[in-house]
Length: 131
Ligand code: ZN
Image (cartoon, rainbow, N blue to C red; front, top):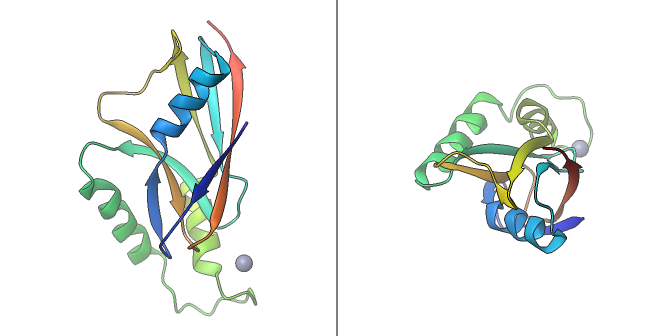
């Protein structure tokens, strides 16, 4: 299953928790895990606090500070910082599903991480049956 994730900023964390939960419900998937995978080299997926919108903002602030824009990068496309950020955060997360619901912690949400936007992005979901 593929989710469409439009982004509107150069770097941005987009809360996709609701989209993933809705997809799990549409699929009728009740127990196991869902893999949330970003098929991109300049984007990522992470789980963190979704209750306070300052948290994803702070994560982005720190990642953008950690990965400098003006290193002597060799990749000709000019978006090497986005590639580095993508690898640091990682392309996927696994979320347990219990009784048809995402078994996230109270404050957790699933974020699509845009590092070279704005673009129309995709997230692929893989459903792993289990108990
Ligand atoms: Zn590139």
